[in-house]
Image 1 (cartoon, rainbow over the protein chains, first blue to last red):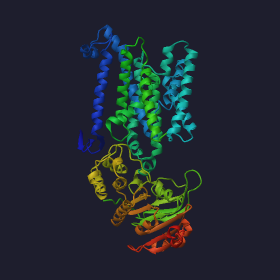
Image 2: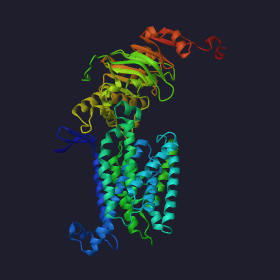
Image 3: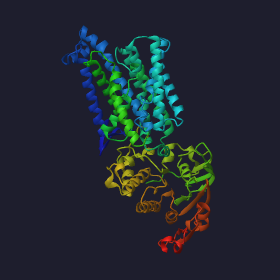
Length: 350
Length: 276
């Protein structure tokens, strides 16, 4: 029996006497609203534009009754792209929430400190230099791990000091991006679309195999994240208190960083280093819930919503050329990054 | 309500403990018995290792040498949560997460009593209610911690460690950021908790407050314990000169008759410029 028990701002999901997990009611409301918005954006993605399947036809088309043209749009063009967007956005949002929680700084985000760029470089090497030798996600994971090792070593203080983290991260970001550009130029001269896909990220021409990859990563990583969620919450009160409360801050920290790297690498291997979803989703989640906590579930949902919306904009843009979605998130997220940098600097946290 | 099994019931014993943060030792081969049901205060000049020692008493820092025994057993043979059901430590600068309410903060003190799947039990409500009541915060339970006054905020943290329901309560400089009235308010609260049966250990800077409230005084200098015992025996002008480098008289506190430190004036009043 699953039921929720009311207790002022918190409820508890209980199953018999064995399970009792506290859940804030506002978090449930935020989650439901976000899911509704994702569904609305998804319907718009599938139905808008010249090739769109009209909303009235969607229920029938999605349950197997699609005719030839509609089947092609849903099964080959927009369907896989949408499913990849939802999974990738969720992975990026969760990855950002994990990293920002352990660094206790919004700027300690995978896309700011070169993690995603490193994954992009690794993916580019494997996909373009060594096609068929290694799976792309393996390259992305190696690139992400190498980038984080480089940041960790070059700060001299690990990931703790936000100022050093960001400076080192910007350096690693630039190195990784330059490296990616070199690889793409060396192999795919004059193909702007390929270059952008590896440098900025793109959801164009995604297939079901991409969808399987990102959702498999989520299927493996999300339960592991759930295991450390409670300890992350205690870790918010400082390492010293977390240690004496028995929340093992060091191992929690190592797990969170590792899982964040895997999520980012998974996202990058299917969609390239799409910027600033990981940075903004946890911040939006934090503001709309207005509660403490690592905001894991809302960050994943907001990340999915942001990426679906950005990709909807990319697909339906009135611009004469179809820009990759990474350009849109870069433009909007860049402005937010500037805002955060100034705010954190004024607060003396950089 | 707060008595877990106590084999031997010996509380905390420190045996030749050496502590360091990877570099030179901060605390060297210290041995110390924390009096069971006592109110122990650790004093000493800045950098003497008192905060480092209290951290090690709560399993917050693993000794580089020697052992800390909890009820006769090495503290590091306990699992983290198990140790945290016996010993609670309030660090000097805990971090209140953005937007957290007093009740949620206090609830986090229940963490050592939870398991992965059981993150709430009926005991929680009792423990949280008791902690809020004891610290006078019941009416502020739904207020945000970061909007409280300094004194209220420190009481909220005390409530959090009380919710842990441990017999041993360790406080690292609990009065540092409080004004004088709130310092005494907090120390009175500690005394009440002590009177109710808790063993309390606190690091304190103010010698007069330490002498007034402690049942047992531990004096540290350069990583070692140089004196311990009842305040009236330990706190002498010779010791204060020796440990703190401060010339002073020790007079009885006119209210409590505990020893009171009166530092010598550098310029006697009669020869001060203002007196002419």
